[in-house]
Amino acid sequence: MNAVTTDALWMPFTANRDFKKKPRIICDAQGHYYTTTDGRRLYDTFSGLWTTGVGHCHPKIVEAVQQQVAKLDYAMTFQMGNDKSFELAERVVDLAPEGFSNVFFTNSGSESVDTALKIALAFHRARGEGHRTRLIGREKGYHGVNFGGMSVGGIVPNRKVFSAALLPGVDHLRHTLDIGRNAFSRGMPAHGAELADDLERLCVLHDGSNIAAVIVEPIVGSAGIIPPPVGYLEKLREICDRHGILLIFDEVIAAFGRVGKAFGAERVGVTPDIITTAKGLTNGVIPMGAVLVQQKIYDAMMQGPEHMVELFHGYTYSGHPVAAAAGIATMDVYEEEGIFEQSMALEDTFADLLHSFADHDKVIDVRNFGLMGAIELAPRDGAPGARGLETHKRCFWEEDLVMRNAMDVLSFSPFLNSKVDEMEQSFEAIRRVVDAID
Ligand SMILES: Cc1ncc(COP(=O)(O)O)c(C=O)c1O
Image (cartoon, protein in one colour):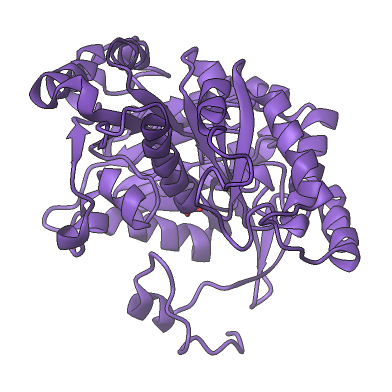
């Protein structure tokens, strides 16, 4: 097998003991393929972890990182700044929906979410509405693993061990997954807009004037691709407006072409007040996240004595020059290679391939939006999640394919510049495996 010793590493979101019995280890990547330590070439159906939309080791991004690390490796970004971070902020704002004026850099999606929640609280306080302290998330939401994101998140195993330490003053809307009414919908499902009224009920319960922000993924990713019901996000926006509540879209997955536009907000036609991003910001090459805010938020914060820090928040690596250089090169690639247009053009093929599983006897639902897709398998009796993990492993060992499962949901995040024949072959392989498992 391979010469890698796996003992010392405590792997994230991994069944460590099971993995270490027969490790699946990557040591190389190029374009749409990985290479394993035992020399096999695997097609990547997940673009990294929703990160690497333009493919692995894109020469333009690699070159930008190499040049930057040799030129300016690091400089403090508190009370001074590096040129690349300012340039990337301009580039991101240029792509953002109208009204977004400023960008705060972080190092991950989790940090972007916690930063966004803090900005929401600080914004209200700066405007004399410090009583707005409550935060609203949604069941099945994934907003990273830090305390703020975990608290507004709604994936049970991520929360249950830490329940004593969750933030106070947080409520959750019901999730919108409704297989009974919406199974096998293509794109946004027809039923469920009324679930947005949960927010109205919470405004009655707490009084809307006490609520700071609502955070949702416009299209749910980690919990198994749940597109919003038709009209749902519009309703949330309207209720937020009526009660002075900030709407935060967590676009750590949806931004940068995953749903055919620069931002998910643009695609779903609803504009939030704050957008969180990461992943596609640098094509996953260097960890980096960003929080985008509307002009009114930045302006409200720019008050008090000018020599004083306006927001007591930031990370040692906020706006890291090497990450920013990777981000700028990524924005260049998006633009020069028409990546968002390529992504949009692939959507129908991708949807057809996913929905070709609709009549499979082990499949209970298929969901898709943009280049986010899920095939949900019926759970094996008494062993939920087993079929999904087995599919992942058999794809890896028998079909030279990297695919991701979330319990029994097979999730797909194809490259934004996928080749149609490779995409087709990957789904043929998935079908062989789904046919073969018990
Ligand atoms: C919507 C969303 N928010 C936040 C995160 C957390 O990002 P990170 O793992 O970079 O902290 C993720 C990660 O997948 C995500 O999908």
